[in-house]
Length: 161
Image 1 (cartoon, rainbow, N blue to C red):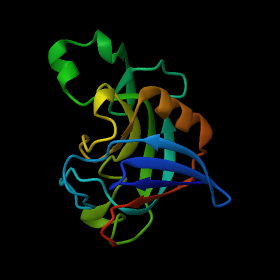
Image 2 (image 1 turned 90 degrees about the horizontal axis):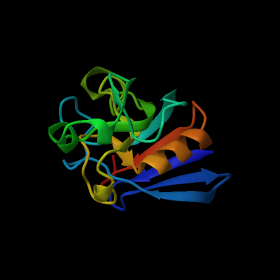
Image 3 (image 1 turned 180 degrees about the vertical axis):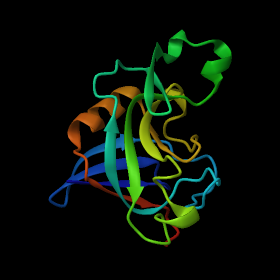
């Protein structure tokens, strides 16, 4: 099993034995793709799902510092809800290409780049994140329940490495 995220298409695909099993609409960064620290761009290249967080959380649960807050996004103030919150599930990513998305100022893991749910599902399908790959909450839960830790993810930026 493997994953491919296409930044140009704003889609995330699950492949099993070379056959596309499932397709999700996603949102990558509203900024240009980038592997550089503090760029807020979605990194490209080969990654792995290195950690899964939130297995028993309710849909819409907000996470801060990778910990559930105990509140769903709809329980936050309107001001807080304007922010792009991390909700429902977190699949943490580790870059596997040294000097591209691993190590130094180009390290996906130390940049805290995830696949996760969002409180702004209406933006899914358009670039809207601060570097992460966002899914609708139920899609994030389904993906979380489908892929094991260690699953490879290729993020394609449409521009080549």
